[in-house]
Structures are given as C-alpha cells and as structure tokens.
Length: 71
Image (cartoon, helix red, strand yellow):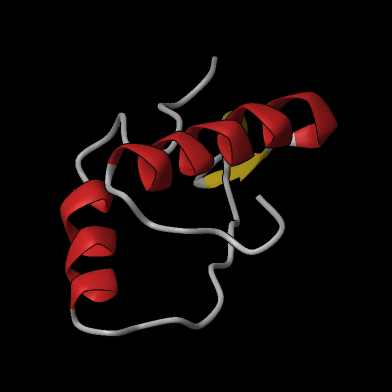
C-alpha cells in the first residue's frame, strides 16, 4: 500500500510553501516521506519512492514559482 506523495494528501503543502516563499523564507526544505505502510503506525519509503516524493516536492515548488538551489 502506498500513501499519497507530496501535495497529494491533506497537508496543504503548496499554499504553505508559497506563503513561506512570499514571506521571504529562503532556507532549507527537508523531506521525510513515509509512502509505504510497513507496520502499525509506521511507514517507510525506500529509494524508488523517495524519488517519487522528491520529484513531487520539486513540482510543487516549480508550480508555485519557488526557486530551488541547483535547479
């Protein structure tokens, strides 16, 4: 079973990140996805699903006009 990727759940990531950017935040983003159920109240991701989550986060930033270092 896989959970939603970045921006696909109920967390409202896009407006939160857009607001942070508009408010002048230029710090770091940290990504800790738990996309595969691994037991009671626990999740894991693994390298393949981590790429899915990272790509989803990059897409949110792109669509919100948030510049990423090295992009």
